[in-house]
Length: 131
Image (cartoon, rainbow, N blue to C red; front, side, top):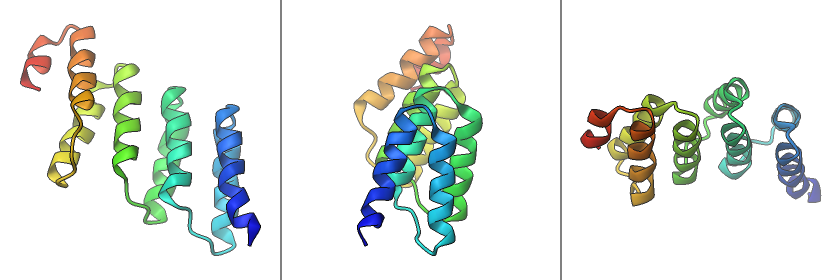
C-alpha cells in the first residue's frame, strides 16, 4: 500500500520538474489499476500547468479530472484564476470566479484583486470596475 502514497509524490516531482505530461500519464496508469486520483494529486498537475502557462496540458488535466469525477476544490479555483489572470486570460478567470460564487464557495479578497489587476493590465477598466 505504500505505493499509494508514493504516486502523488512522484506526480508532484514530475510536475515541478516540468514534466506534467509524464505526471498525467502516471495518474492515468493509476486509474487503470482502479485507483481514483484525489483532488490534491490533480491540483498538483493543474498548478504546474497553469503556472507554466501550458494551457494545452492544463486542458488535458481538466478533462481527466472531469472524466474521473474529481470536483474542483477551493484551491483548484484559486490556482486556475491565478494562472489565467497572470497569462492575460481574464475572461476565463472571471468565469471561474463567478462559478465559485454560484457554488456558494468563499471567494477570497486576493482573487478579486487578481481579476481586477488582470483587467487593468489589459486596459479594460470597465471590466475592472465591474468587479
